[in-house]
Length: 415
Image (cartoon, rainbow, N blue to C red):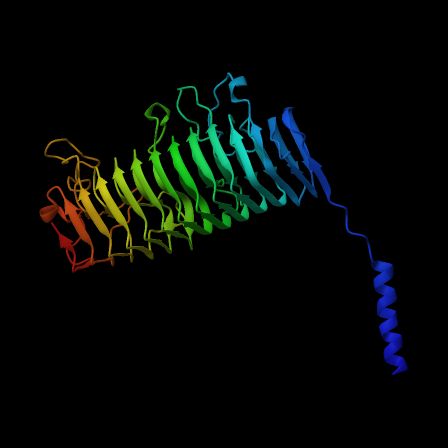
């Protein structure tokens, strides 16, 4: 027993000798009123910054300079009107963090940052830009009247939240986006950089977005859930690329887009460029001035395969409902209603590919490829309800090079 007591005492002594006090967390309460922070306010690691209960407006920008930072309960005004020179997109080999000016809150290479109950307005660049970061939480943030333009007077993607260069373990939840010139929420990485990973984009609301409401770019394991929006791709004068409610780019896998609801889209409902080995389930889009759901394969490291498109509602699309390439994929139990409102090739010419006249006027179209060849083979198209202009005859179309028996089609209702 004496030996055991001695051993225990040695452990206690060692713990005392090695003990170091935890660094004291710095807390800063901003005073009430308007505070000039031009050009920027630097926030060190281990700091909490919050506003006065009587209202605080910080004019300028914030740069996070360490880990474990919390910002909450104040307004950040980016003074967008002070910008006079248009901004272009960065060159292909430069990050947005190193190129784009006039951002609101910048987190570059730091971890565990929480931004909650903030209002960001009049930001010329990105309202929040996280690059090479980890453990980023953005919750109940309102972003409005933000984003700048390029030399052509169109949007340059800015205005919303950008998570780039392998940012991981992030959450953007319960935020509001209104009057954003570029993208609302966007993950992006250079082709040579790590993909963004383990993200959660849920319960956000969008109104009047000039580009994409949400774009998942070069990422893995991202959940896009229960977001809502309207007027995507407006105002038309700001549009610089086809707007999409939920867009995809790069190489994206192990991801889920589910329960999202959008209407009045001046472009596409869901674009799956680079999406594979994932699921698109239970989403709805109404009044779509373009195609419903589109597969694509721009990134050379992926193939359009193992995609489940199930139980979605597309209502009132100018063109078709679902464009399918590659395989095997499942397109099942979707309601594709009132399609081809443009009456393609009858009242209006709609020829994306001259050799494939049925591409834009079919309810579901089996293509021979997109950016790269990827003939639709081994796909199952079943139990879909398809209605609209001439859908009884143009319900499921295919490229001329696709054999009739290359895919399985059964129990689809066409009228």
